[in-house]
Length: 336
Ligand code: TRP
Image (cartoon, rainbow, N blue to C red; front, side):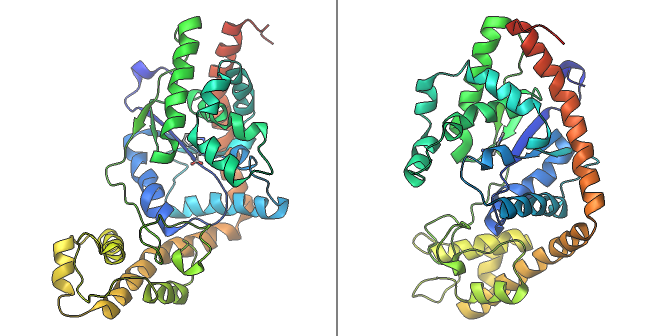
């Protein structure tokens, strides 16, 4: 299974952290792409819960976030018959390879990571070693599966570059152990902005609850938030510089309905923002409805849910153990 030469499809690895609610922005920007990627690649997806504890978590909330994120991704269309989708902490090889890679990663390299610098400022009371070595765990995630491609947003690009550097360094010493992963830029990378400040990305940590829609948001709340969305002092639905709020709503509506900006402009010519916002809200409600229904069903059968993540963990363990054993042998450890 690991021999790339004999494979038809490339191996794709990606992970998200189970750190709370999944937003409409996360869904339209990244997760929706995961679903489509499943046909073109051999996909291995993970919930990166080990990464999440680099920021202190409340145990009960953390546990619920993990389960809900797993169920929600299934509800969004991650299909464990086509792909592997496991919980990172269930597969021991990740922490093991991360330790080894730590010894092939330089202090200087980790110090230059912008995410480390940003998070150190944000969590200045808890600048722990895990936060610092976060990128070597990420490198382990990717390299264990000999991944060829990794879809990454701009915020994770530097970590992927470091992963490539670590892999090349290791290969340089020991021969070809790791595939060198390429970044994968998805075809349609929608960036959904805050409904209250459309110059900023939509984020669940926004202090203004009206700024962000989550995937599990109730229809009446979705409607309310879109009605309150910030626009501008004109009244014309048209895509233009300086009309960030309207542009964002048009972007969302275009994704949910498949209509082009031109078509949207025609549809709402002379109608004004009020009705436009209602239409956007209704399209989002329609989009979320089947996901929310599926989520509810999945959460009702915890036994089946645990079977799914356990099965995937087993597959992930099998594949990743091959890489880990090879690495350990190359380094000089005595094989068990
Ligand atoms: N650090 C990533 C994030 O917070 C999640 C992640 C962990 C990841 N391991 C990965 C993403 C490996 C891509 C590949 O978004």
